[in-house]
Length: 605
Ligand code: H79
Image 1 (cartoon, rainbow, N blue to C red):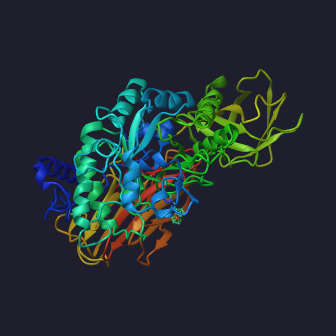
Image 2: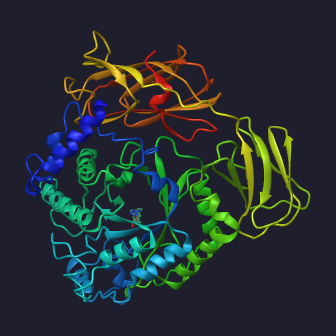
Image 3: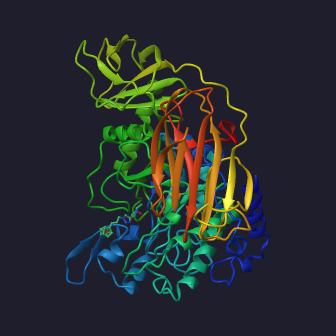
């Protein structure tokens, strides 16, 4: 509870400040003033929070890369007559002088941008949210920002009365599609960006632009990029800058979903991880995740790029992502006139057709990691409620079985092929089950076998209130604790400036949690810690996680057998030396999706 009070106090302080006092260039910007010993930035558990619920259910979104670079359509004819090709990185990669780049942006006139058509293309594909570039690395704002004139209103040939972000917001709202904004921290245009001495001036403008975006368009999500260490131009962005920005944004709107590039793309930054152009081969430890990917080989429009992925590959990517509890953010790049390329629209339509056929979308929307079984080499398995969706990409020959290796005990009550009346024979076999369909695949992309499963009954949620927490003013956990109380969950993000209690400084403290943990099922659980600087975990007196060398934010895991109805003794020791401080304790099992261990299952003894 104490944490909530702190977070709320931080919020009130931030919002109560006059606008002029908010922003990094001030001597003490709002969020920073509120932070300090006693501050905890972990407002909730993204795995279970109401705030992130839509993001965890929706699974499939549209990324839109659209900017001044779109006007070049990926080609820069050099003065020497040769053509340099790129897309959204064209200014940097083709070394286009700023004056020349600005001149090219003058003629940008995306008059054919049709928000209704864009939203319809997303909706037809089955996409539930849209994330559009409000500002890419080139620094060009796609809305009429008041912060500078390097934007689509003031530096283009576009209709001065139009605002494509407002149009998109209206169309998305009307269609029940969520809207989010991509925003690049790295900025090639603002002269104050690269020099650490002037960077605070840039940062102040960045805060002002983000406030405009949040206040004007009420986005559901912010997708940061350009947070990495790089040169040309030099990027001064630090994890400390990330701490302050994230706190500022959550002060503006506590419901925002924010990706991990708001900080330094680590497991402790923002709400979710952002693998790019790749799909992790298993559920990601310690954070929600979303894989972003192009439809061809570029994000921005590139008129020469015809290397489109097939609808089949895209559907399979979506299935792979969902079956590992991730989201899929698939990109379109409108052309200079603002039109989404027809090959993109065609492929999105193919995906939508597959998803709408025979309820196959149930394998994706609201679904997650299959958990009960190992991922087979013949497809992917997702779970929604007590249904497993086995999406078969390699259909077996007549009479041949598909084998599923079980990760825990469960019964299969029925099996059927979506969109087919054929029978599926299920037999216990070796380490799991054989599924033998009686007929052919229904389609060449993925044929879905829906299995009703009975995982056995889980115990009712416990009535625990949390663990006993002792806070020490030293990293050795020695002497009498400064604070002793009940902590509802081990879910803390003290970062640089915060600490567990106002009486404990932000560096050199220790925390010990003791009590018991009671699972709702008898299963092998994976305990996961996300820690910085050090952590040790004991279960029933046995040291199962020993990560006592000071480290950067890091994930450690242990597999432990826990029995329903039993209170397993737990002890967690944590120490913070200097720098950032983080400590989370999560669990997962074949039946339990990853989450911070909830207070109901924790007791002080
Ligand atoms: O907005 C999209 C990309 O423009 C951006 N992120 C996605 C969402 C992105 N930034 N960097 N990258 C993607 C990958 C970086 C690749 C790099 Fe390079 C390799 C940077 C420098 C070497 C590619 C090749 C860019 C320049 C040369």
